[in-house]
Length: 254
Image 1 (tube, rainbow, N blue to C red):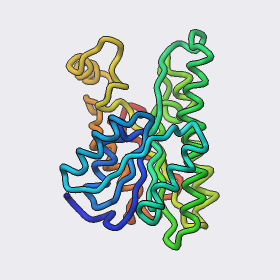
Image 2 (tube, rainbow, N blue to C red):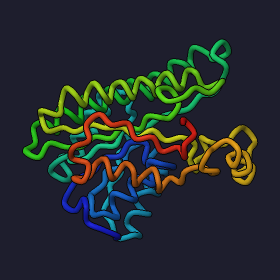
Image 3 (cartoon, one colour):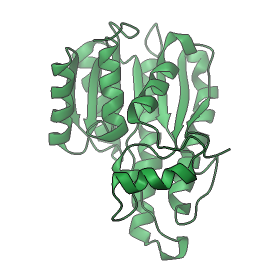
């Protein structure tokens, strides 16, 4: 354990079996939160729970598909039933499909929409409905991207469109529900230390060489760096931040 910013609070993290979601779950647990980790596959979630436990934290796993409204409602109920409230929610679950727009299949397009956009929409609905009933409200952080609202890259047009939609959902929902005590913001990572940022057949070493030229920072962001941005937005220190979109991309979108 490394701190107590979220001691006594419950945090829900979707897409928590790997990558940024796992790093976010570990970071919340290290700051005292009771963490509900969610995703479509049980085994990776169990690994996240085990890592949290090894570090002295508390976490439970819930299998859920964010593209299914019933799953998302059940997920929020499970968090409240287990820990009594839902104080923080991080809507991280997402998929990437890279292809020129004219070559993207209809199934790939619907997969992007279902998970990246509808999944965030359904999660926001369920989380807001719960949080606005709580005396202390709650904080929600959506994972958008530096692609979409902030920059465009060839062969990522469809993905960027879904992440621009997440940014718009964030701003609109933030305005609608801050009066109810529900504070909503977004983090927009660029290339980070996950498999999603690797090109087909590319090694991490090759990516590192590529990023020396592609990013002003000269490297990808670590998942821990993205996680700390999420924790900041969810914390009391960010109480005046409403509808903020915090870009974590080493200056790539400048």
